[in-house]
Image (cartoon, rainbow, N blue to C red):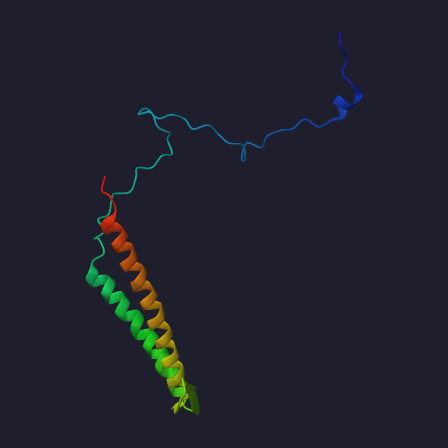
Amino acid sequence: MTTPRDDDLTRPVPVEDPATSPTPAVPSPVGGPLDATPPPPQQHRPRPTRTSGTWVAVVIAIFVLTFLLVFILQNLAGVTVNFLGGSAALPLGVALLFAAIAGAAVVALVGAARILQLRRQAKHAPRG
């Protein structure tokens, strides 16, 4: 026969709080838990169209152009720009606008070259 040790008698016994302890779901007559709510009705969402995508692009472009116009109007101080042996006196905002357009053109050319490369690969690839 074993006797309880002294520290077993002084150790507190954990008591679960009924408010925080998980309670098992009681099955309902149809087989699911009682607290289950029916799913919300499906709402019909129209698919996005090209026109809606174009409209969003136009709205974004209006905001970008507005900020660009404010930037140019706030930077009208004249600067001399030297490029490939030529020089021109331009407002600072306009010079930066030309630089941004030139950078976008370079990115567009690289992107177009990559698209052409992928099309050529897809055209010559064996179909399976």
